[in-house]
Image (cartoon, rainbow, N blue to C red; front, top):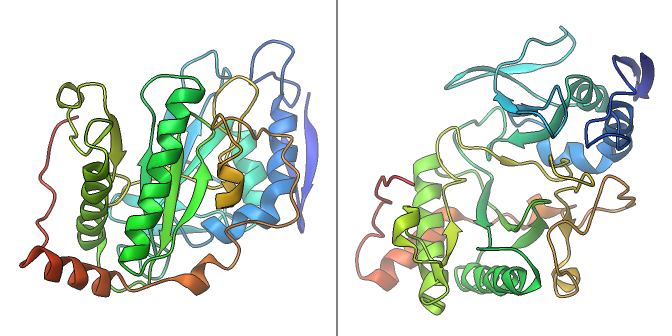
Amino acid sequence: MRTTVRAGRRKVEVGNADKPLFGAGGITKADLAGYYARIAPLMLPQIKGRPVALQRFPEGIDGSGFLVQHPSHPRWIRTVWTSSGRMMECRDAAALVWCADQAAITLHSWSSRTPRLGVPDRMVLDLDPVGEGPDAFDTCRQAAWSVREVLSELGLAAYVMTTGSRGLHVHSPLRPEVDDSEVRRLAKAVADRVAARAPAEWTTRVRKAARHGRMFVDYLRNGKGQLAVAPYTVRARPGAPVATPITWEELDGLTSSQGFTIDLDRDECPFAGMRRHARSPRKALGLLDQREGGVVPRPRTERR
């Protein structure tokens, strides 16, 4: 079955529209396309200008998925040259619906925007709990609050988002002043300070064998060509959970990162106006250097 989805000024044809993507009898490709068409007003401001990679599941979440950074696409979809080649941008609702037609359930985006690729305007700390259940998520929530405190001490703003998988992302909007490597250095310094507040529970050790059951305060979403799940993207998990920006007040009421699904219906986004609160990463690094009595070390390259 084929269907046509109205997305802004365009109509996008969706093939195999009745194909279940989330298990037999479950959410279909048409449902996914309809969600992206509907959520576009909230999602597009968060990803416009950012190179996007697609995580495709042609056989649905029960099959194997794969990441595509350089997909073939219609001529009307805009692209941008990056360090890894030409990547697509999602600048309108039609582009999001086209991604759904490709069975691209999850979209991942860069931390910098055109025309200043490689000079991030956001920093992301990824908090992925060890284990499942409310207790594991509670540790993740506590870490998110600690990230917010450390960022505030450095004069940086903090916004929180469920990943739709297991954990949380804390976003900090930045003035585009320094390159990817400097933002990673800042992210590592923030993560170290968070981990130091509960060293028995949290760590910044990259190698899993060195974590000893502690939650990794992940700063690796920052760096050249690194990707993070896009706000409002759907995740390839049963029930079609959504990576959802939330308020800090909402965070206290959550027991799982999968509390929001493809049925999400919001008029306003908690991330709206985030760019107005962008702060200087250069000043934050300078403050850290003063406190360290020298220069904040660059993150070492470690194996996971």
